Image: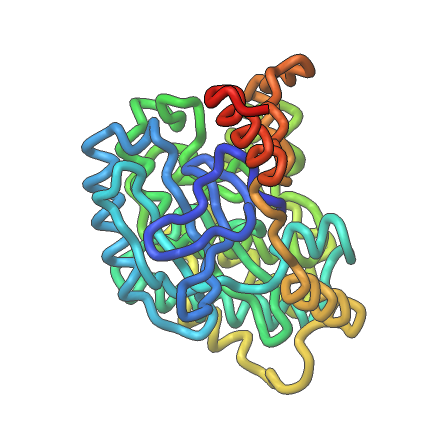
Length: 347
């Protein structure tokens, strides 16, 4: 998390803002706290998106649906104001890093039992999302938060509101993809109507990433169009995926949505023994340190926050007029007495 900068608001709705958690295509995410002390993640929509009536209509609908999502492995939507000048939505704050940070920066690929548990709990989360009539549409490692007791899925369904900004291509009017190139289903690439099976494909891609540390169809630096073609037409390389999970992951990644397993099938095939710690000890220790940092985090006083580089600094004037020195009361009394004597002619 980062300190707030000068341009950030101090409050959004009933929440006092404490820090910046990140930014995405839809807007900024802040760490906020209610008067009762509850910590939340507040996502604020970009003003340019809020200007579009169709976006507002879809955003309102998707937030209302997201508030109905229950389940253990999701971050609950707690509050929202879709009619505000700048719409926002507040969700349960999950004190843990995302899966990208865990795999790419801190520890590398997860062991087999961790990937199996991840599959079980993400599929359980998708059951809750789909049960509320939503499709996640953007299931990827950065939308999976890792905690001591299990993963949590965030941002479910909200990505659909961005569809109203899309033209005939996959790009929005601001040039952003609907979805993330490394974790998109073939039907997303082809611009077809999405079903819950699209999320199952993305689940398979997330599991490959968690098990191997690499993107399903390679890096996107080779060119976006080439990458999208591989998603739509080529078979995924599952080298490095644990043998006990290869068949399940391959089924999730079937090009035909109708041939993919349902989330309930994934849950059943990964149930097994979920007892004990689901992550290696080194990862759990890091999560403990992360939670401690949150408790110790103290926002800087707004006057002391680092300046926004886009705001010109105000000049300081050394020769600014200074107030006249204050004359002590006893000196003022003596001067008044002397003036009266001069007026009366007395010495």
